[in-house]
Length: 168
Image (tube, rainbow, N blue to C red; front, side, top):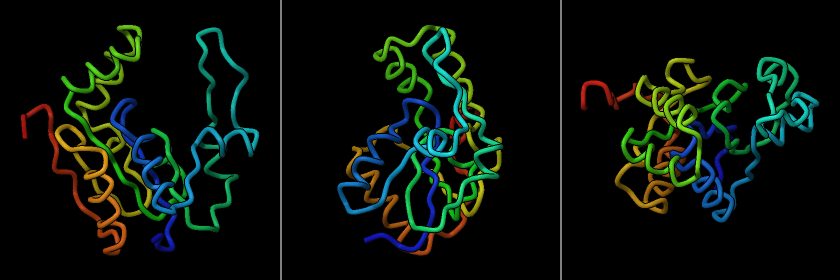
């Protein structure tokens, strides 16, 4: 069951956003990605030499019309005009292993793990109400159940609790 919300599903690359988005879609939620929205609104660059495409997230945030309930998968989704942001977190050691298994270059692993260590999307102040969920030691199904329960409970704003730098 999907409440009437536009939900950002955000977090560092490798934390499990796309896995959670797939589970949400299987549960009947409307799911899209930041990339799909950027393509629809002409806010994405051509393929660059490194295989990446840049998204004009500020232009997209200004242009996009999000009038229907949906979950938006992407590490920049919290910068769009959403009602709530779900911030998925993962311990730096587990995240490093996940990114290594994707054959990411070391500079990209270090950059993404550093972003996670300093709080990822929290540094950008996610739009709307927000809560974080730790994906380190939980199955994707259990994580999705926790996220969906939070959304269905009215998605109260929760302050960040995870601090990888101090070990809490």
